[in-house]
Length: 223
Figure 1 (cartoon, rainbow, N blue to C red):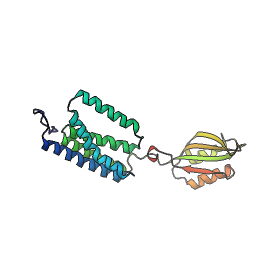
Figure 2 (figure 1 turned 135 degrees about the horizontal axis):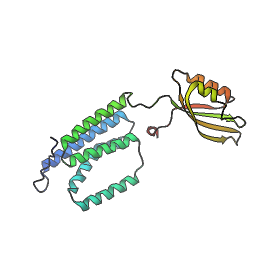
Figure 3 (figure 1 turned 180 degrees about the vertical axis):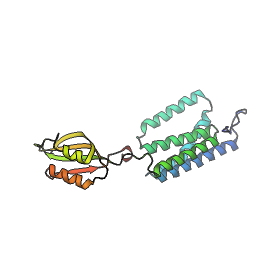
Figure 4 (figure 1 turned 120 degrees about the vertical axis):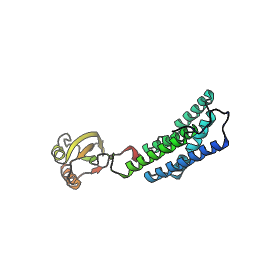
């Protein structure tokens, strides 16, 4: 069913077949770029890259055409590009691999297979992006509390944590303000139905109304 459009019985590549593969790679790349734009904050340059990368990978696959020496040279060039690039977000890396998959499929002549996988993957990305499926626990928070240096931080907040959280782990502790204050950072999981304002107010009473900050955890997507 997913046969290659390339005729392996003849030497060389027909121009019509090459144009079909190139058009398919570019069209599927544009589908990927529109999908990434709809589901992520991005730039025009990255979208252009996603739209044209399948076409370039397809061209590389056709140029290799089973030549071992050329394959090694291309692999070395890709390695240099990889080490000179900055690490991106998870969705950006996914889209780059997605674009390479499209280019590989088109470069091997499996146009229908590439189109089917693209449709399935696009549906999955849209489904996961616009529904609550696979969402992380929204009750996870990062809590930062400033306390005086003479306060015993190991037990002073225990009763409040038992009342408002199901888990509270001390992650970091450091001195600030010339050592007169401690800055504590906790990972906490809030109980259902509690009011965050009440939680913060009780903490402020305990820490002499010094700084209290409750925030969402920093995820890879936010970097």
